[in-house]
Each structure stands twice: as C-alpha cells, then as structure tokens.
Amino acid sequence: MFKERYFPSSRLNGWLTAHAIQTEIIGNSELGKPIHAIRLGVGPVKILMWSQMHGNESTTTRGLLIWLEKYLQSPSYHEELSLLIIPQLNPDGADRYTRANGKGIDLNRDALTQSQSEIKTLMRVVEEFQPDYNLNLHDQRTRFTVGDTDKEAALSFLSAAADKSRKITPTRILAMRLINHMVSSLPDDFKMYVGRYDDGFNPNCTGDYFHAKGIPTVLFEAGQLGKDYTRTEVASIIAQCLSNLLEFLSKPIPEQSNEVIFKEYCQIPENKTNSYDELVITEQYQFYVRYIEELVNNQIDTFFEFTSNDKVDSSILNFRQILDYRKATLEEQQLISLRLSKYLENE
Ligand SMILES: [Zn+2]
Image (tube, rainbow, N blue to C red; front, side):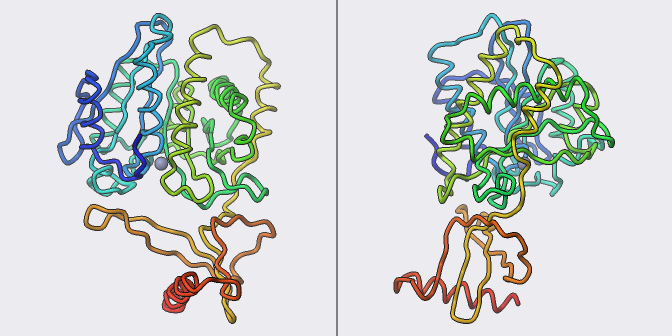
C-alpha cells in the first residue's frame, strides 16, 4: 500500500489503471486536470464521497483505495447501495502538496461562493446524483488531542452545524448516527484516539452547506497515531470505517431515539489543540514544536513552528517526541542544538 503522504494525481491515475478501474471525468480542476469519479452498485441508497478536497490530505484517499481493492474482490451491497466516489477532488493541490487548489483557494471555504471549478463540479454532481448521504474525507494536523486527555486525536468526526444556532436537526442526527456506528465498531484499543470536531457554523464549509440543504454529511478527519508520520495505520482504520459504514447503510437502520443518538455522539470527546510534535528541553529553554510539511523538489520537507513555554497553558499535553538535552544521546543533542538555533531565530 502507499506509505507516502505525498499522493499526486499521477499516483492515483496509475493505481486506477493498474486495477483496471473505469472512471468518468466529471470536471476539470482550475489548472485543467481531470477530476475522476467511480460509480459502483445499483442500489436505492445513494452515497457520495470525496477525498483530497485539500490536496495534501491523502490519508483518507489511501484508506479509500484499501477499501476499494477489497470491495472489488467481493462486491458486497451491490444491489443495496449506489456509490459515487471522487478520490481526488483537488488534483492541483495534490500535485503541489497544498491544502488549497491551483488558484490558492481553500475549497472547503467555497461551498456558498462556488467560485472554483472543483466546487462547481462537486455541486453539479450532487445536483445530478441526489445523494442520501455524503462522506467528506479529510486529514487533520497533529495539533489535536482527544478532549482533555493526553491522547492524540488519530481520527476525528463531525456532524456539522446546519445554521448559526447549531440546533440539532434531523439531518445532523442522521450524520451522528453514522458516526456513532463507526466509532462503536472500531477496535477497543483505538477508540481512545477518536475525537469530535467543534461544530461552529460556517456556511462556506461543505459539511455545513450540505447540512443546511438537508443532506447528511459526515466529516472524516484522519489524524496521526504516535510517530507514524506516514499515517499508514490510520489509512487502514479509514478503510475499516468505510467498510463498517457501508455495510450498516446497506440494511435498514435500526430505530434509535434522537436523544440516545445525540447523547452517544456527545460522549466522543471534543478535540483540543494540546498536541505537539516535540517538546524540547535544554539547560535554559523549554519550547514546543509543530511540524509544517511542504513539497520541495518533489519531496516533502519539514519546517517548524515554535511555541514558547509561557504561551502554553494547559496541564495535560501530548507530544510525539520529548527531546531533553540532559538525557539525550549525542545524535539527539545535535538535533536539539539545531532546533534551539531555529527557535532563537524565531524569538
Ligand atoms: Zn481538510
């Protein structure tokens, strides 16, 4: 499977060709690259999913392909579900490894404005396909912890608000129901790494936009477990979630009261931004580091964002790595010196 975060359009196209998967071109990106879609199944329940709306968020795309490979070996729910899959909505951003599209626009802030061809394509597909459910597939940064715990959020979900008052609508309840099912089906030793996004309303976000229109839309945010910067393990978890969810949707959904659904959803802790990639401790300084990844000469390069000790207020924090000069090996000491000089440059 793909172990690299950088997942450009050529890699997707190569995979689709190698697996002899027929796609249709549903539109073009702002820079003229084709946007592919895959249709599967003939059932009455219609599910639309799109991934890599943010070009540098490939974990869900890789998870989707793991699921797809299994599905093609034994196509379940072919008679129950109709699936329309857009594995890479933003091929320009995927190629440049950027969140934004080729014009520098964040497509997840363009739902209402609909200024970009990628979003126009998505809206046209929704209009034609009339999905019963949308799956909106993303990656989240490493900054999130599961609520106030010391666990990093390796996977998060959201049933977005449908209006400013954030009232609980039937559409939101349905999305919550699907999230609850996926969370309850996860392995027990992974559940503690699952968080929920806050539901502040922004009508230009796709989830909020579709909830205002009455289409239940589940936001997936694939995160990072521990120091697995390739996110390969989480990609497999995404595949499991998709498989569990589609299986669930292929049968009548068992009755459950809105109160029970809402209560169960609220039990997923809301994400806090208490996670850092590194805690660095030297004789004189203590500071926190977050990584920022950018594409340089076709490879992902890591840059650093520093937070000084006095700007951090929470008592429980999560670190991917602690670099303590007093306990460090020679190799780590060199790394700490490098970080310290960068930190002092930024001070
Ligand atoms: Zn995203």
